[in-house]
Image (cartoon, rainbow, N blue to C red; front, side, top):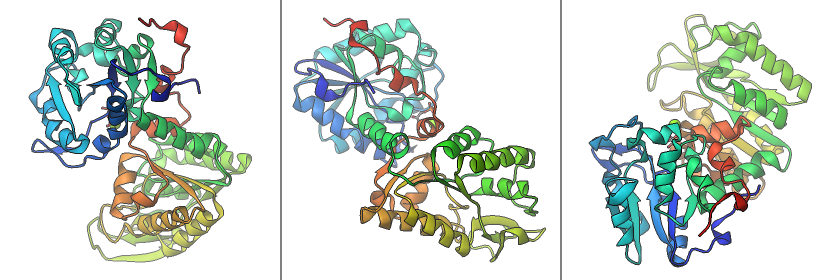
Length: 404
Ligand code: 3PG
Ligand code: MG
């Protein structure tokens, strides 16, 4: 990887245009989870400590080029000031004289926050003109938004070609964790992939069977794999039109020597609701009027054994309907086991994806995993083996850029 880090840059007295992802959950104008803000702290502190002026570029929501009060980044300021411990000065536009004026008067220990980049239509189009206007506001570009790096937008991609660029601390940490989990891992590598639909994770599964030694398939998509083996899954969530695809993935796994772990027993219920009556049956014995909502204890034991054999674990997606008890049991048990192995240094565990992190937090083990990614879509695309434009744009020779 030819990307630079903050260590390679001279920041003293420089305006450091820093792309962050502070697309955080907000309810009634208040931030309900500050994780993404917490995780950009190191970068901002580092820039300040080295005499740089952090100027933050960020998006929020999907305003599609329109200015919308309910998507203004201004509402994040109280949470940001609290987490960062410095004053955040807001500019009502991310380009032009309004932004310029704020940056020109930025004092020591202050951070400039520029308004939602997606209020400009050119952002998502990666408009070179908008990227150039952004680039005028800084001397150095630092991308710390790994979780938005799957977007080729003006503030994540275009601008990186116009200024001396580097990865921020969070971006650096994410890339290092993911590389150590999948590009140069300690083997055996185990991947746990759950979630509702095979159709949304096709590329992921195809890539993983080539790269990992063991693959656990859980959640609703396991039902599609069971159905592909001719098993009647009753009323379970199942993409019957994807059974041929599931079969092809299973065949590819045999070819590549990737051990596929499907549920051996399952928890079934007649209703999809909290505390619904449930029973454990063999995977092939799902009653016609019932649905599979979680992996059973035998499956969990099987997964735990795989975790014990693995040196590296990469996890995306819950194993069951984790939002409603008791169908969170398999996810919780497997997550706790992985956390315990990680804590004693037997396992490198990396997890990512919105639902996944919510499930691990619910199980109370997120902090014991070796690395928790802040990314949803970007984590998936990276695991699918795709190039992330925001990362690729950092990976270029310095001569291409104008430095003055
Ligand atoms: C996210 O929350 O996944 C990132 O901020 C990217 O947002 P997007 O999916 O709207 O591009
Ligand atoms: Mg997203």
